Length: 353
Image (cartoon, rainbow, N blue to C red; front, top):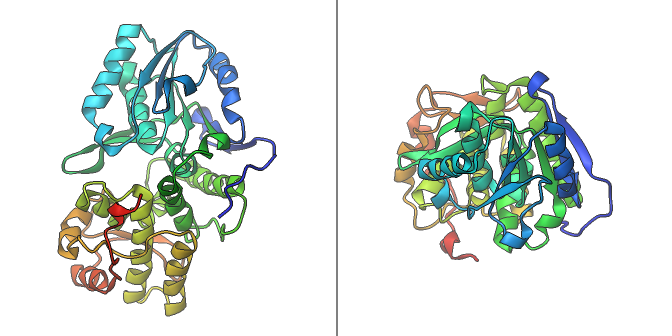
């Protein structure tokens, strides 16, 4: 995996959504574009919500309210959204101003929802500072928070005004945050991005964003094609719940990707070589490919039924002869059989720093 900084111009990828179109800027120093983007919006004030240390908060170039919001699923709640909106109101933020998020995927999701709801929608600019947020969470306009019953069950579509993926912000990421992001990159291998292994980091990010931008432009609100972006996520989200979020999202998606390959094989949709390719790709990124030893597979099926795609029985995005698609009403017996055949890790992944 390439993690070194590459001297290159900031790349721009457009998300074509008509009046809601915006650009994603990727590369070292991309955050320097923030003040100009805020000026172009005509905003007179900004609310900057950041998971980063106070001294690293981005400068929007206008008077700003700065709010601290640590990354983490514990803060991805309706109570947090209410607190943010209350702070926006106290500051006097108007719908012609701007909200700026600076942090990982949970920050992007939560701040995005607050921006979508406050005054029925104020512009938001995302500055994702983790690999996971740069390759996936900050792009596409899906905002959501969790309920005790499930992940991302309360949300709204709210496209950002811009996304600034500054690769300089990734230099201090701990090992586990790299795995968290590479879980989303690994699943891109199977949904149209091609083989990204060995490419420079900025190219891996750009390829992932380019793929997502094309899918979102074709299907903004999950009518069909956008479901393919959730490859590996049905089991992935269930594992997050089953481990009380001790397993990170990208780690769970990686395991879910292996499971999706195995389930497609059990259903006769793909052959053994393609099934094996799922495990090979996941392992190549240094990701987990086995169920945690302390999770009972029987607890995962009820959690998978809570998946938002599950409108008709157990539903999974699966590979097949015609490519990746959403498959509804997958027989529970086949799901259980595939879960039983999954490898089990020798130790809990929650113990990995």
